[in-house]
Length: 295
Image (cartoon, rainbow, N blue to C red; front, side, top):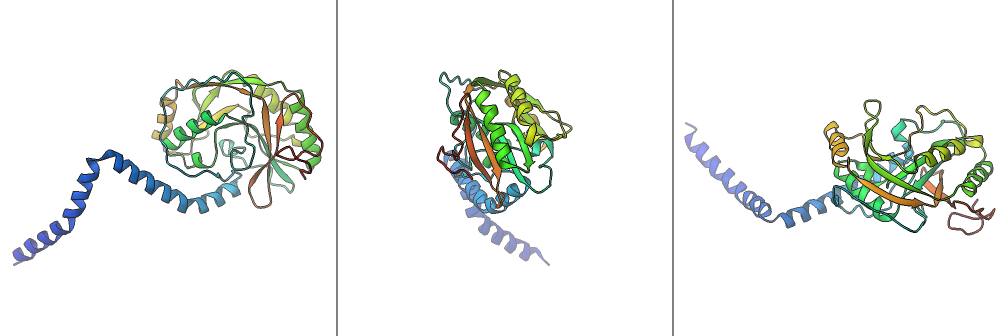
């Protein structure tokens, strides 16, 4: 009774699917074009999602990223980068890096005041490579949080001037030092985070943190401070496993000669207030780019 209907339906379905199948086969036979289209689609998706994501990141204490959102793939499985001359590795403007509060699951004290953070930024070539790796593990924060080492996670202060003087004084007494990041670790099961270990420079980071997290920035932290570089956070368990395995032989060495002082402003955006050179005393009225009249 329905024999003719089935035949007619099969012909209609086949006719409809034929161009789709042909196009699929065409793309499968042209990997370069397929990758181009996938990257284009990913960029469009990121552009659409950026509005919501930036709003979410601002509310939870992350800095919206000012990058292009361009799709990228990781470079090599092992990177060895050694820089001979100290240079500013921290960001010079908002949109490059910010204190990453999510690893500890804490976002400041919650009282009224100014929310600040302090970080060590990375040379561009290392930051960009680690960003590609983080994106390859499916971590959406790869597009908004460039690689860095947090010295002070999101902390509330009631006195900006006292805080700025406090951070400036510590920077003036600190000598530049080398950092080596090598091998992976994880905060699991406490927190779904995979990170790169800090080898050379570990003690310097701990000492800086101990000095910074005192005086106007003194607070009780929910976790002991452990300098690290996050490469995957809050992604699927298999992606965390992949990150921990793939980057286990990663190694990079670079000099650190400054640290960035950030403020979480009234619009929910992390703003770089000052990039502080180690071993020097800044002018009292220096702004984030070295000009007068910071606040």
